[in-house]
Amino acid sequence: MKRLDDAHATQVETAGIDWLGRRTAPGKKIATIGWCMGGGQSLNACWLTPDKVVGDGHLLRAPGQPTS
Image (tube, rainbow, N blue to C red; front, top):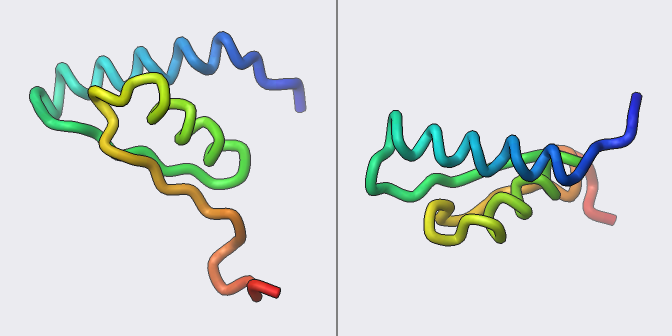
């Protein structure tokens, strides 16, 4: 697996949010969700486009996994 190119990932995230907002949810905010590395990307999308993303959800552990 190669290292994630953060600049490219940011471009893809913002382009996807722009596309989704124009095509399927004009005037509405979008929520994002991610697991593991995707959780960071979800949070990044929220920070980059607060006018378009209402919030993000990301898991810090797998469902059913003990908390301690």
